[in-house]
Length: 230
Image (cartoon, rainbow, N blue to C red; front, side, top):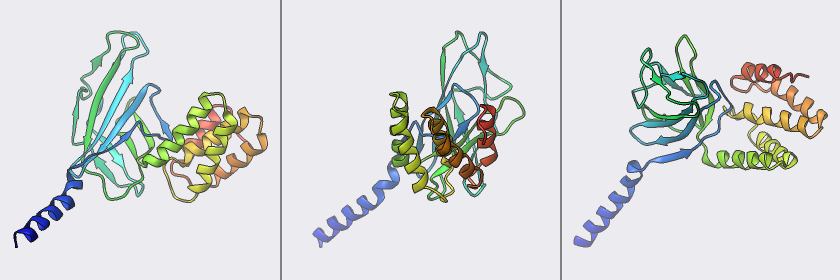
């Protein structure tokens, strides 16, 4: 009887352990963002909360920064999860005043626990002036790694190899309604142009237009603002 009790205790311990663990998504990729020097350092996912660690670098003399209290995680189905608390950042109209150009400022945003199973979310500050946004924040660690590998190749001046990875990822994730889909298309088009493959760039630009990717008008606008259109 005692042995059975011990075994039962071990089973209960094992089955309850995952609920105490945190999952970390380090430097998640995203499709588009609003502020050039604002970054998501990591996302911590637990059964009781979702924590977004962020950093921003000051690039101007006399720069300042604050965050509105109305900040949301937006799910693929459009539902919103509102910020529950923030740490290290003033709530507008209070501001943090940077002391020097190049100074980095870290802060933390906490939200309710994620709903079951989203592969991506948008992070949106809902305000009236200079609001920040991240579209298509990817929570799939494996997909993030593959995208990182492609970026590393591009940075190493191997755009052709990076282009192959981005095309493979786009083909594999086509019609999955992923928030990162726009990023894949944008990089395929830009890398194709960089390597002189105008036919591929034209093909994927038109595929993007008909893709139905989340936030599609923003991606088209982004490309057009850089003089890219077909």
